[in-house]
Amino acid sequence: MTDRTTLAARAAELDAADALAPFRDEFVADPGVRAYFDGNSLGRPFAVTKERMAALLDAWGGRLIRGWDEQWMVAPEQVGDRIGALTLGAAPGQVVVGDSTTVLLYKLIRAAVAARPGRDEIAIDDDDFPTDRFLVESIARECGLTVRWIPVPRDGGPEPAQIQELVTERTALLLLSHVSYRSGHLADVETLTRLAHDAGALVLWDVCHSVGSVPTELDRWGVDLAVGCTYKYLNGGPGAPAFAYVRAGLQPELRQPITGWMGAADPFAMGEHYEPAPGIRRVLSGTPSILGMQPMLDMLDLIERAGMPAVRAKSVALTGMVVDALDGELAGLGLTLASPRDPSRRGGHVTLGHPDAQAVVARAWQRDVLPDYRAPGGIRIGLSPLSTSFAEVADGLGVIAECIRG
Image 1 (cartoon, rainbow, N blue to C red):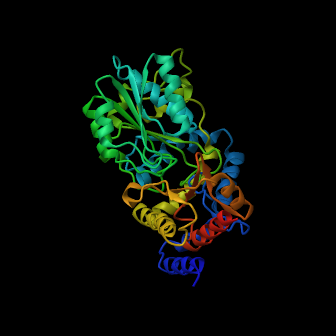
Image 2: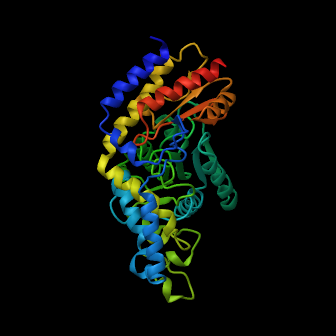
Image 3: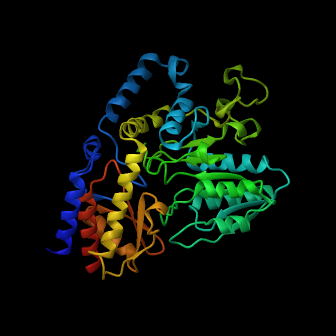
């Protein structure tokens, strides 16, 4: 058999044994797409989401302004609690759905540094997602702080020894990503959080590339703050709102900087001065996007049925198939592994290095295989476990190999 036939035969065996395979039928799939390798950027929609959106339109038209009193006002906390319980390991009252990832990161970074007066540094790794790095730089300028950059390899992430060295009594906040957007490196959240706490710093975790793909235990790990998006593995759709986690014990001392009326203790009192809501609601600012919360609810239902351990097991199997193919069927094509080889240190995507990566990705798109290009020279294979088959991975990798061969 040819290499491609061998890969397809292995994929068929894995699909036949996949207990999560029936869930794929619940997603809207474009028959013109051969392989979707971008589920870690934008998840597929659900067929039933049309019904959910239609029901919301009926409620909007039928109840009008009454809908706020009857159900919408509490939606940010209710949906936040579901995200927390199903994917984050967070007890109720600690997660709220609000603004974009960028706005929520800004709020919590500013609030965290204000909560540690006398400390004049923020630590972040030098290959974190651009938004995270840009925000840290601008907030440092605003507040007269120094940024301590943690150097990381482009195929890895921050390690405990670096945190011990760079996080000190001067550090107000350590900001890191649970899963690196470029390499897929999976951080040891519990250990790194403990080391930062030993130095008296607060810790904020960006969980955008892990929520819904990697089981997370924010409460058990002692995490202070976290922010995540909902349009990747939670399938909330383009521009779906993000969420924020604030540890219950930290909430009373946190003062977020964008003090809009929805985060006030009594929004409809129309008071002269701002008084923050007593719990997680204080993270809100303006009117939340009720429309934008709807699609993710279908994915949360699916995760509840499947269970995060099973989701993670399939994610490991999918990314493992890519790594195995790199060592076997894809050998000799100039590809390198730009992600951790150990599956316990790897999230839900794999990045393959190639000197002609950008052109290869462009050619693959022309053939209806959709990976991501990430500079410099990275072909990112993002595999959403509940909507991706092993056969799809095998076919997509075969097309990428043909695109490299020209």
